[in-house]
Image 1 (cartoon, rainbow, N blue to C red):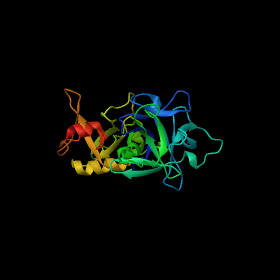
Image 2: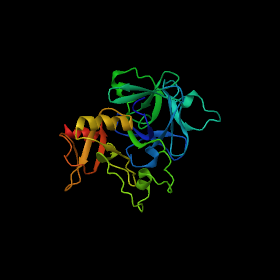
Image 3: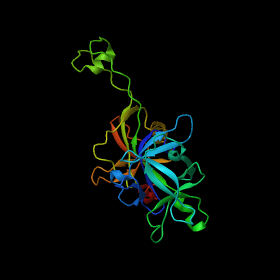
Image 4: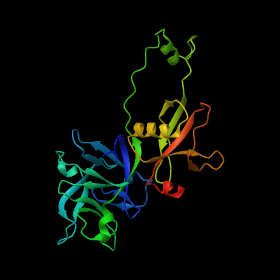
Length: 270
C-alpha cells in the first residue's frame, strides 16, 4: 500500500515498458508507450478500512476485473473500464509489494497482467495467475506517482487580527514577520525520466539543518514513499543529478526533484 500512500494520480508501467492505457472507446484497457497522454493516468481511490484501492480512468470508469474469458479455453479474464451501478469487489485491487514493483491482486486471487507476444495477446491486459516462469514478470508494475493528495491547509487567520501571525498574512502591516528558522524546500515527484508535468504546483516546507539523510527521511514522510533519490537541477545544463553531500551552508531555498530508485533516471545514476 505504501506505493500508493497519498497518491492522487498514478501511471502503471508494465514489464514491457508500456503504460496501462484506457482506450478511447471508454471500455477497453490495453498497454501503450505514450505515458504523457491522459489515457495513461489513473486516479486512486482508497477503500476505507482495508488495504484495497480502486483505479479510475480519465473517462471516470473503474479498472474492473471481469469474469469474461479473454479467449475461450484460456485462463486469462478480461480487464475493462466499467461504471457499475453499485461499486463492488470487481473494481477493488490489493497492492502487493514485490521489491520495487507492485502486483495488483483481484478478488479472484488473480493478478493484473500485461500480456506480450503476437496478436491477439500483444498489448492486451488481463487478470490471471502466471504459471510459466517466462511470464512471471508480466504481473509486475512500476508505480509512477503523478499527483499527491495533500490535506487542505488550515484556514488563514482574519486579516484584522493584530498579532505577529497576522502580520505574516498582511504584507502592509508595520509589524515585521519573523524570518523562518531554516530553509524553504520546494519538491516535486519526477516521472520515469525525472520529467515534471507542466503547471505543477510545487509544495514546500521549512527544513532546519543541512543533513541530506535527514532531509530524505523528511521527504519520504511528506510523500508517503520510501526508496527515493533526492535530485537537484544543474544550473547550466538543466539535467538532474543526485545529491550526495550535505546541503549548502546557507539557507537559500531549494527546488528538489524526487525520483524512485526503480525509475529509468535512477538507474542511469549507477
